[in-house]
Length: 401
Image (cartoon, rainbow, N blue to C red; front, side, top):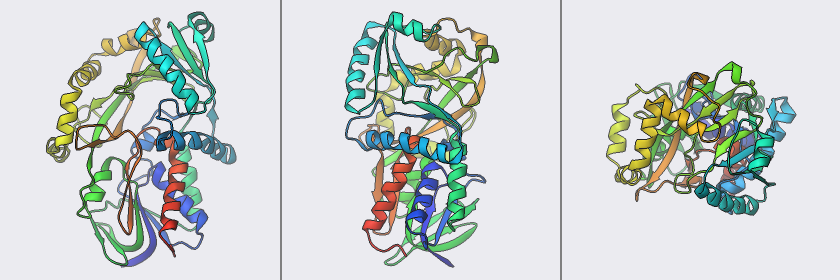
């Protein structure tokens, strides 16, 4: 059985950032990164919108607000240092009715409280900035940018390997045993022991905690985010990221137009309950995942609480015209044949026992393990400060080597 100082479980952007920064701080560390997929960034990190978020929506003082603000600067710096293309295109939040204007004014205050540059646009100024977009008002946040996070992950993996870290793919962790001095990690591909374990398992986050015989206090509920890509003739339709004003009760809902680093524009995502944690297609179903969801009272409470919103999202998933109607609220020139197929993503959302959606980043710690329990968007943007936070927490516990 091979021994390590630290094993990191999870080859997405948070796991890669954590492992890379641990080795930068502790060059003599013997570190192994494990992932059950056959490639890095196989799930959320490789299936997202590619936005470097500025930190518009998050409660001031929360980990999301702080890490997103720090992360958007750190991500741009990493890209600049390693030649990764990114574009600072800015974001427009567009209000299309009186209720949304009221919410936009509240959001304006939050954007200011989070220390971000902002600009209020009336209808005429909005039309001048984006001729294809219509609304009563908008807020422009110039710091928002776009990137390909798979390229960011590739650079982190290169840095990790250059510093002496090991990466093993196709290693699904099936057993964890925490002892007084070590943690035993078993998978069909091998067995290892480590002095410290960090789990950045995304869609499987709660299951890694439960392998230790601990109830984490939440379950991961998967939401599939379905996208369309605008037809090539619509390339250049908008110059900003175009977002609707979110409902404060469900801030991750709302389809938007997002420029992509390859010059295209995506429309989406919606948010539909996925029938499998890694269910990127409508037909993907996992009996194990369904039983897990149905057996957790918190998820049942959450679904009952948001039944109307869930039904609306399902209808938009099944009806392309309904999806188009959401987009035409602020971009009325779009037509049905402008929407072409594009791969979906799956959001790992932690749900508490009372049925509430866990809003902030969440960490679960035991004497020798640290688990990232909840890290949905903006986790890709915030991955560098999240990794730094984990490295600092491990250092506070004592010697790593």
